[in-house]
Length: 307
Image 1: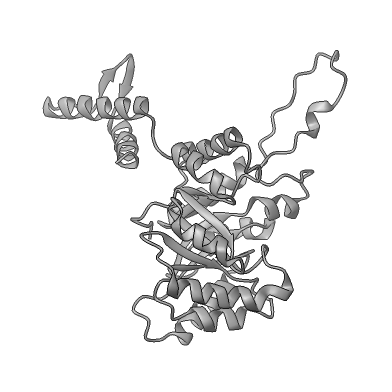
Image 2 (image 1 turned 45 degrees about the horizontal axis):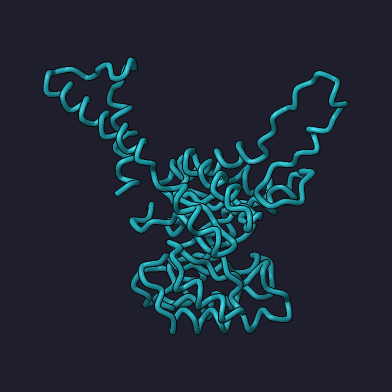
């Protein structure tokens, strides 16, 4: 169910902040999710839902993929959120936070369909994988219902779930670098806290033809870190990345666009393979490297990303 619409930069915005929601709708982000969960204090939950409903009906969202992150499956708010949002035609998907058990996702999908039986297309479900249990069950979650459209990695809560010694969202902890003295001669041990969960989420998404969205970089004022974090997700094969501030949109979009060098190399691979195929060959040497149909498939994907 991979979306035909781009999802490179998905901007998160608190649903109860009407001015910020309007700016998000007018932004250059590919997608927006209005948050009813972590970005909204308990006293503002009712207002946030009202504003989400109003914004979905009143704002011009263009071609954006528009989603709403609901509250947790065991919260007292979720029933009213489903009732209020299920029938709204401009809503593309609900993001389910802390997705852990397939039975919970099936129950939410059934409640959505019961709440809006006449809706032309049921509301899709994006699953936010942000706990150890959610990651263990990610394959079953991806396959549990035909309304599941995307998997997102929730980097902040996931780090907390596994006990990582970090308080920065989307950044690996660096305390390990200070072990021993500068004169000890020991090299710093590399640590990438998110490589494994990113790959698990990505593989599950690809296996079930779902959108794969990486979690945000919390350092929203650091353009270089924002872009390098997005470049990592793009290089791995993710369809996009959450951003938490409008300043992160442009560097994230850049990261998910192939460079001219990448596009030129991909076009040369396609041309070389087409010539080889015309001569009855399935492989050819290009720039000292052997390329075949696997390279051709990879090259065509890069070209498609740049179109």
